[in-house]
Length: 257
Image (cartoon, rainbow, N blue to C red; front, side, top):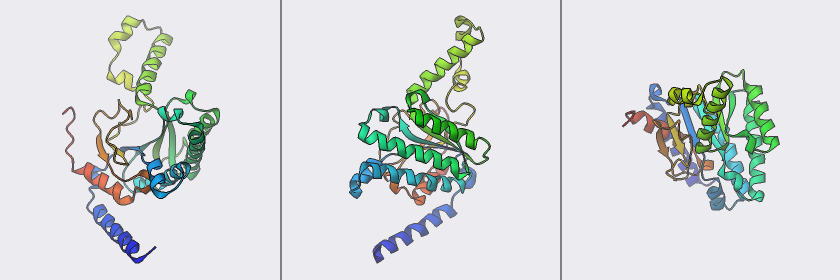
């Protein structure tokens, strides 16, 4: 590292301390959703392979959760694999699934996080399903941040699954369809989502400069604030995280418009 890079790093750290010092902890979001975008583009810019880009993105996760643990964040949802990602070529999907399995196992072994899967398990390989189940069981007692790992996740699929679950539940209780139609409301559907009984995301962060949700938590983010960051996910820094929190705290939340 040359002198210029060292000086730049020092200035970034000093700026981060300044931002953190002015952060209003009373305005910290309780639930943060993260669309971790840009692994492949980071790899291309760095002259690395796609697998190395995904690994660099995976390595960023525990660092990010560490930043969250320094605040009052209670829930973090990490979008690791969409339903669309499952259609990627096998030479990319295979290594990616292995990296994600390692991430889940590492989070469970850390001892600080309570791991919860959000997504459709049946569309995932058997090994991934077992890893997710074991991680949830091993961390069920942990009193740390609840980490939702969104794997095999799609927002439209979640709503479809919630409606299907609601219908099955009504059938098991012997509720007639006309009676169910009268009972259906927002809260009833919410109880059948993957994140049932969790607070909705207050803040959604998306890296890499893309400014869209791409189907991320379509139901739960109706009143969320969004923060779009130009930085690719593997290069996401603490100062970027603090800027997102500062931006969130500065906004006046007006539900419904």
